[in-house]
Image 1 (cartoon, rainbow, N blue to C red):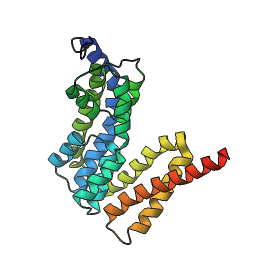
Image 2: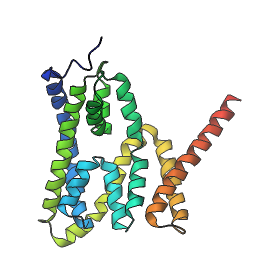
Image 3: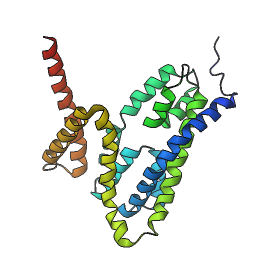
Image 4: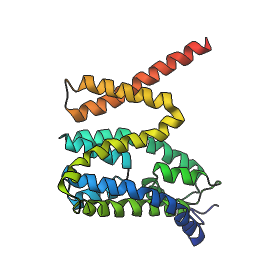
Length: 239
């Protein structure tokens, strides 16, 4: 009978994961620093900013949450919008679960929480079965970097001149553009189409609902319309 996991006594897997996670941690540094800095200008306390990084641990969603907080959106709106943006993590977790070694629910819960896009990409390159300790090692470095440099970025903002701190709101939009560029290179038409549809539906919904709800409904509507149009094209192509 196969044991639950035979790798927990093998520190080499954890060590290898930590080593492979270092590039991710370095890459997270500037993004986390910027998040911490902007969180301060948005009105969050250092405890709130760091706690958000500790609990959410999702860059794009946290930046979106800051935007919605700045716009005065309610807690429910922010939570639902974040859930929609992070829905892809359910698919990534399911994919890793199929390829990872058998382990307890507690272990799976730990590495599922730390499964960001970058951690998923690195872990997915490994041969099956992917060791649980390896995934945890990669995720631990990424998580530590993200949380630590969120706090560093927050305190770094206090040394900047007031006018520069106020202008950092522009960095929020610049970062969103930077996050979109890699996706545009891979799936240009899809990303651009979704962006245009999302912006269009948001502009329409904001006439009837608060900005936070408009963002959420606009995102859902854009996805549904895009999928509908794509299905019609595929159907016509097969006729």
